[in-house]
Image 1 (cartoon, rainbow, N blue to C red):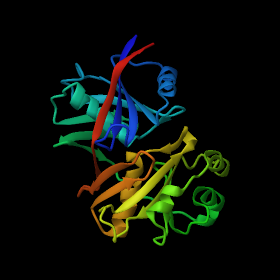
Image 2: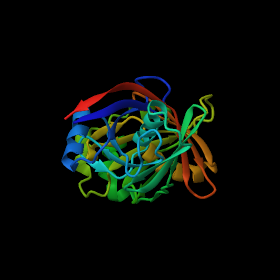
Image 3: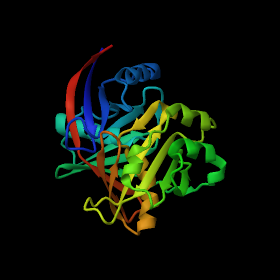
Length: 286
């Protein structure tokens, strides 16, 4: 069997930046263990599998199935690999539709083009305040002695969000080196699948970023996720209230870096806006 495969850098306009995802175009469904084996072979934070469903082909169809796998697990929601999937269909398959619909474990996700950007219509996942004392060892493993302003948890996405105090700056966020094994030792309940560390943007800089973040997910086999759209469904829910803004510009401070634009819509959903670069096209033979 031959499967068309692409590697796409999401949330960037520069090759080898942003978050890479492998995208496979599936003529037929595979067994789950084969999906997982392919994702392990690709060894990226996510490998996405697009199935045609009732669409005739990848160029004229508007509705597709979409699943995401890390090297170790299937996950229910992934932003950057959804952006990357739409990029393959729009840019490589020349899909003629103004909006693509992806049927996923989290319901229908919509992606449209606007000039050079892709806009994803995602749910907004507002986090709830979390008692810091209950997870003090995990927080220590995550941020050491840095002061913490807020800790919130989103049960829908199983993401824990830690906001550093405003006295911290971007360099301290960038310098964090939480050890994957230490995070795993201090969270064994299965309640948390991803850890977000975030910081308010400095008003004195010219960057224009409303907030910064980093994301760690060793619980699903991803020590650090370079730029993750699903984390921004939680971050947008938190920061929009704190900043009293519906439109925000965010930067994820991984070694690859990436920029995410966020707009909370009047219907309560979230537009996640980003760029994508397709850097590899090939054939997977299994």
